[in-house]
Length: 148
Image 1 (cartoon, helix red, strand yellow):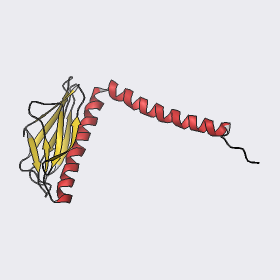
Image 2 (cartoon, helix red, strand yellow):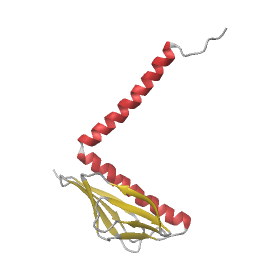
Image 3 (cartoon, helix red, strand yellow):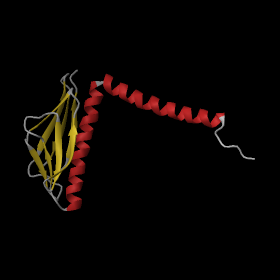
Image 4 (cartoon, helix red, strand yellow):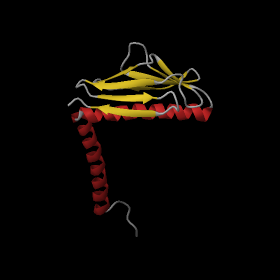
């Protein structure tokens, strides 16, 4: 006769796996909260990836994509395609976004923008991440400046 249920070894393995996952997630959260420069770099990378995704989306769908920075708001940005909002990105309280092409950046179906631009993400300590969008070639690049 076959009994149903789990053995003690199976339960211990499941508990060990859950513990490892919780430990990994909690250490990431604690590290991010304790290291403002890492927090800045993570969000700058996220913005850079969103811009690259918007470029790819414009080229793959043969439409333009707009990255919109609401007027007077330095805490979020929106991505629109065909005048429809696709997503909004909020940044943490300790970070601020500014740009030199306010209020939007239009990315054509070629992946190029109507003009180049610069997005600056800064924290309360004076650290900055600057994302450059080159008008020729549509190249995106990021530069980190840490206030020592």
